[in-house]
Image (cartoon, rainbow, N blue to C red):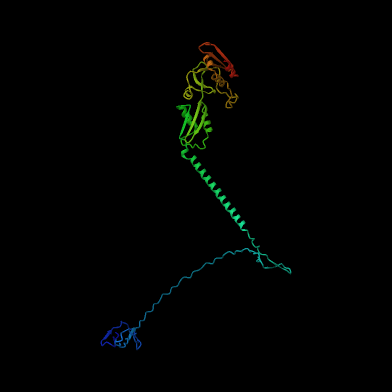
Length: 364
């Protein structure tokens, strides 16, 4: 253990003992300057002069730090692969030689040519500049007006198209005039129009053709009533006679156009009154026959005898209708009437072959 160090102050009679830190190293003495004169203090003239003080010597022990041995680290050598890049032959670009304006160019002779520079801009009169600015502004305004008109037109077309195909312009009601009950429902089905059908683009002629495709419809008219209704006016076939084969019962109805249908099927469809005359087919067969007897599946032979007979009956005036009763069409295509009760009751009126029906009806 090192001996204690004595520190004596000049103005003190006591001695302080300090124990240095436990270290085996020798002490290093630091000697301060012999005379240290403190800065004079601002005192009054009557203050007494202070005696000089000497600083004590302080010994600082020397500390030896231990050496630290760092381990040696051997890093692995990294092998960089060799990449052989393909050789690229770039094309040679010939840059033309440009002589700056005002320079001399050797033409190969005894003379040198002076390269002319760009011509100096010609000054423009302020009036022309103003006119050009006005023309450019006018063209700009014209383009703006054209674009505005085109934009407004496109917006209008878009609104119209969206309105036409919107649910507000769909068909909500289909009115059938001229028929009621089951016939009217059949007309609605044949029209092909359902609630919600767009009225824009609807063709009344196509709807009319579909309705007139029903055999018991004589005429149809279709009208679109904006914004949500379609009206169909139909005229059914007018029955003119009951048809009977020979002496059998009259179980069919014939219209003025020659349409012949079963009584039970046709009666609900046509305005049947029940007070029509009877047309008996005495040997006349109204079944369609092929034009070529050897080809039963070929075209049907056109025979308008039955149609002409029904047309004749339909064209009889009020007076003839009162005088004439039932009619008969024989195998030769001759039409005869039996007199109705009255002046010619029981008499037979023969129209013969139905070649000139209007003249014969007028003669009656």
